[in-house]
Image (cartoon, one colour):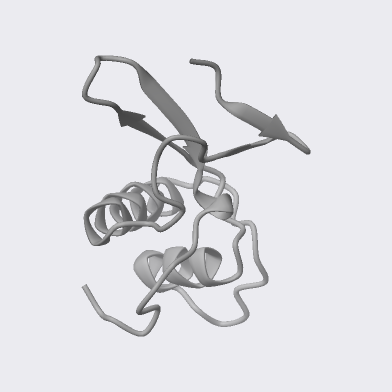
Length: 94
């Protein structure tokens, strides 16, 4: 199954359009580690220095440069851009 690609980003076809709390935790952790190790930030951070807060703000602004691979029960997978997913409970602190 080939994922649908639109405007350079992957959209979910067979899976939910929502970012799960587990995916959110992993995305924020990975992105915060990247930022802490010197990766370029995709947003204007102002005076913010905490990598986790920067990663959360990138997620809110839909500027997180990551793709999630969701494995399906039949062994195939679907790649989905984080920015294409709907984030619920944005104020929920992990």
